[in-house]
Amino acid sequence: MWFKNLQLYRLGQHFDLSPETLDKRLHKKEFRDCNPGETATTGWAPPLGRHGSQLVHAANGRIMICARRAEKIIPASVVRQLLEDQVADIEATESRNVPRREKMRIKEELVFDLLPRALTRITNDYAYIDTTADLLIVNSASASRAEELISLLRDTLGKLTVTPLQVKNSSVDTMTRWLLGKSMPSGLELGEDCELKDPANDGGVVSCKHQDLSAEEVRNHVKNGKYTIKLGIQWKQRLSCILHEDLSIKRLRFDDIVSDEADQSAGDDPASRFDLDFSLMTLELSDFLPALVAARGGEQKS
Image 1 (cartoon, rainbow, N blue to C red):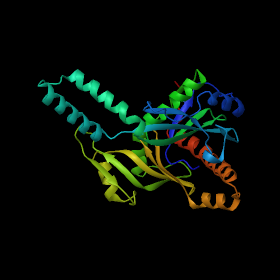
Image 2: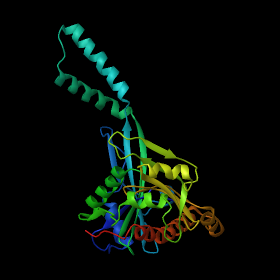
Image 3: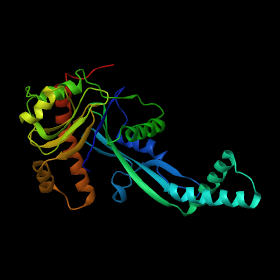
């Protein structure tokens, strides 16, 4: 299980629950399918999917969890058309206008009638707790989706203090200096993508993809006043990603050298392969993330 996007959070206290204890806690809110009248359900599922039964997967002080959401899909266009037809029929047969409150009631009844026949969409959101560094790392491109997982975890455990990871130096300033050619910390190199924004309220955005970011034509945009809000970087030729101004990480990719290590050591069964991938991924991130935080002046403690 290789993460593609990272939302980084600091735990407010040391996470001292063992994987076995956490598994028992998560079973209290284990995922279940929607009942006929429900629009959505959320709960914990095995990170190993159909190949596992435990709700946690632990390795080297890191514990992976998986929040699963089932959502009934009822197209808004279908509801709107049925509502319009029913309102038109009432107005024609009863010679009266249908007030807004009555329309809302009819709409609710339509949705309730459609629920048992609706298709269900299943989504899984993964995260892992680094008990050695007291970090929570969520595999999500959306901060709001990550917050949903955290809310479920907090509700499950009863109490959990979690805040977005903060750094001392402005991410925008740091990325802009790197793009201008300022020295980058050892192991970090510029990638091939960036996004630059004009500081004016209605200022434009310049997106550079698959380009030499050290080229003068790219740096001229910065010299003319634009600042960096997204920046592609590489780390020790082992991973690459796009850094965002809010400290989130997108398009995370582990390079061939890491993939080769996984392939050479891979087991025959899915559980062994999952465990190996998880161990290699968290090992790489435990090296990369502290270096990234240090490169931005260190962590800003609240």
